[in-house]
Image (cartoon, rainbow, N blue to C red; front, top):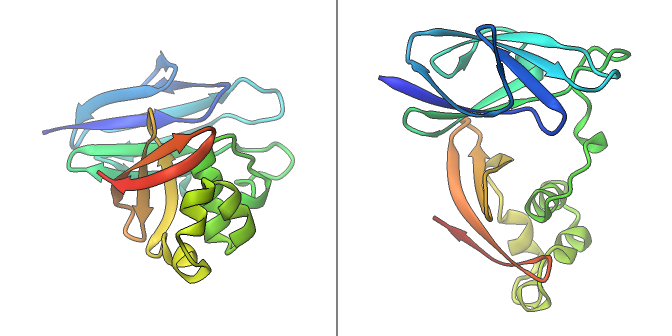
Length: 178
């Protein structure tokens, strides 16, 4: 059975996948096939590194990559930058996001209700109390941006649950599990 890997290293990153240049997106490989992914940042501040994967499982450099199962046979691979002066993944606090759903997830995860409410329409914010707001992402540890409002929320077992974040005037108007 083939598996699909969605490769994402953010902007300004290209990859070598088993020696072939790749700009990111979906690739298909055999379930037991070894895949070597070399992350090539296009910034002089960042260092390249290589990750060995087999069947959606990370075999090296665990601190620099996360692999999430989105559905049977489909995995999302998230690569983190490797800084030349730190040699590790940057802390979550230093990672800036431009996406409203990611910003909302981060605020709720850090229990910052005021920041979380700024990401919602007034109507949605007024319809939910702080306790319900803070418990919304219970059981989820990360969010993966897909396309057109679709996101996978990643649970503690690294499994993805698909959600649609409906945005109205740059803020979230509704969140629906797909």
